[in-house]
Amino acid sequence: MKSETLPVKTAKIILTMLLYILIAEEQTISQWTNFQVFPTAFNQIEPTISRHQQNQQILFVSAYTINLNQRSEGTYFSTNGGLNWFGNDVCSGTPTQNHGGDPGTIIDKDGVFILTHLGNIQSGMFANVTTNYGTNWSANVSIQSNVDVDKGSPGTDDAPASSFYGRSYLAWTYFVSPFRIVMSYTTNNGYNWSPILNVNNGFGGNRSYGPAISVNPAGTLFITWASSIPNSPFTEDYIGISRSTNGGTSFDINENAIDINGIRTSQLTPWTIRANSFPVIDIDKTGGSRNGWIYIATTSKNLAPAGTDPDIVMFRSTDNGSTWSSGVRVNQDPINNGRNQFFPALRVDENGGLNIIYYDSRNSADSVDVYLSRSDNGGNSFTDYRVTTQRFRPRAVSGAGGGNMGDNLGLTSGNGKLHPVWMSNQGDDVFRIWSAIIDYTTIGIEQISTEVPKNFSLEQNYPNPFNPETQINFSVLRSGFTTLKIYNSAGMLVKVLAEQDMKPGKYSAKWNAANEPSGVYFYTLETQGFKESKKMILVK
Image 1 (tube, rainbow, N blue to C red):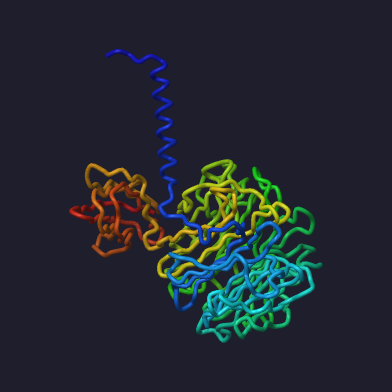
Image 2: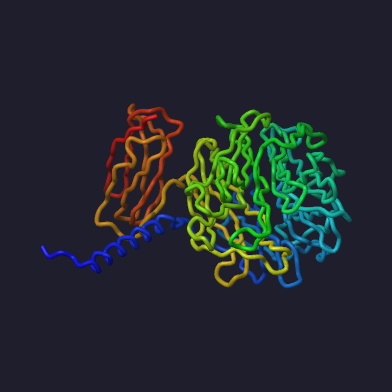
């Protein structure tokens, strides 16, 4: 056989490396269609989203909107589960000039839409109300006026068993020393608000920023915030948590419940943008085995389990906030790889799945994707999924102030779907709100190739034996309804990985068996004209 010359060998090595790169990139392809919620010439940043409590098809999104010198809050609505949207980039609640961004959305138990926001010509916190999808808005309702405030965050008591069912809350930073968190509540759909109530007192001279709200199934109110060092760049040092069992009248306060090392800066590398480690919170209300568990996520670095670059870290409480777990690193890319994860949004879905979305630069040193990390076991482990189909390069938004690209993303769920919202300037460099509809009942399935295979196939899982996660690849030859199910050695169904229509192509499914005992399991693929089973072994 004729030996290959060095250039031929070199060319083959290069081609092989390129192939591996392409395969690696292909495996990060999003499986969900991305769309703009409301295409416009306005910049739309700081998105937030709420879902109707009774009709899960109804969604309410808001964003801080900027067009030259005009500022307002965009309000966008869907009545068919996010398939179609309507609304306006400017809230018509008078005076229309007094809309300054930092929007918050509430759909209360009566189906009334409440928008909270900063003032513009008058400083303070304000609210507007609509009962007809934004066709008419109330005039601005003053909650706290003529004072410097920052970053309002709303929430509503959606627990029918609660003594305060239907009460809606708003928390924000009272932006004068000692920079504490304050709150107000409404019992009549946002038309009137209570006097201002203190949430915390401040800690060691620290400043309190970025509050977030959630209510547990019994009606206990939780407000969390970042406790930041008192000097620039105001790095987040702790997460504080206050708990109220009387609808916010008084609080049990823990100023330093969780130790973090935040990323507060106006120069997040390699982009000159403002970033933060404001916490997000949600509570399991499913009535299942984790009912009442509280989850908080934030961004941290240089403090385990975070690495030397910004990572998303999750903490949980299983005893109503009395104690908190150690941190769990949420994003599953290699640690200390110099890539950024920031701006988490958190949602516990109706099946008890823990879902966290965030910006992520793991696929590019220069640009970011939106990733979803999902846990089916209460945060013991996470699996990552790329949500975006196109990356974008972060930058400051003109007119938004000092390095501002916005401070947050949004996430809600309903009818077996996740609804993330994020801001992206892909395409024409105008920031717009984007979304995707994610079916979390089949979220473990990823199409890794659209090339029509030569035949059906079900591959052996890898690794095998495994602990606790394994991957199953299979090929579908013809479009049709496909199921992939896992059974234990007694023939009992333990997990449905797929139960959906699939197009021809190659697919990959991951199974996390952290909650299953060691033993022999069988997985069965059934699709048009094909059925096969294989054995796998879980060893703990």
